[in-house]
Length: 267
Image 1 (cartoon, rainbow, N blue to C red):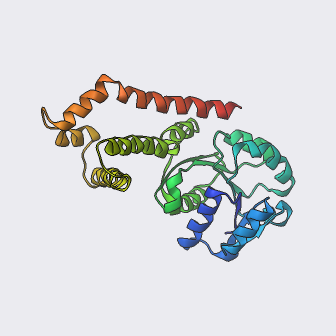
Image 2: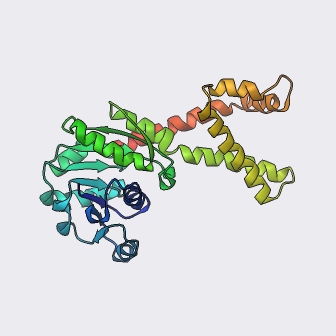
Image 3: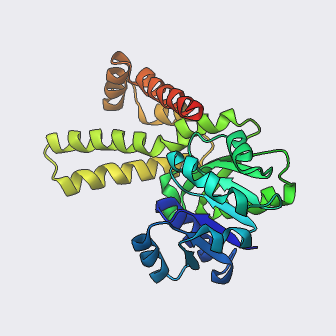
């Protein structure tokens, strides 16, 4: 199976490297299309497959074409490659907000998979949600899921609307975590810890909490109760969060991200 990644940015490079590292494909079957000559030159030095600068040289060779470009680039990209694609190819898009229907109509193709990865995919700890058009076969879907899973974990969703929801939760989610971590790091500094000490205290606490959550079959609420003794320090912090509607604000933030994802899809 020959794979073509269109776009050699962060996610395009992540996919290419992850596919090769997992040995699910090899350099002979890996292609990258990058329009920037300077970036293409840099990619070529990484020895992760054949790097092309022109679509005419690589599109027709691919069994799977991955769109790893910015959503706003598709208006120029699609017309330029439409004469080069064919119906038997499978197309995987990670362009936020660009619907399957938009891709099928713009390219005149039927086999389209839409996915939403996130940044931790760069270290093999990503979370992706994906869905597909009806014409994608089960074998093709499993093939693509295996590729996606080289960057972490994934879930298949039946309705495309769920991709927007995944964008708001897992796609944008790492930024929410870092936002909370940053606040805790600042609090630690105010309490007298050095920058290095503050960062270690917070990062290890987050890592430990997540690992513990994944190891045992307890809900977040049950874990909170295990830490928060009556009249203790944790209870005091949680009461402050409750009084300041922190929980509601977090939910509202995710809803704001969902609203924006839907708006981008209509643009």
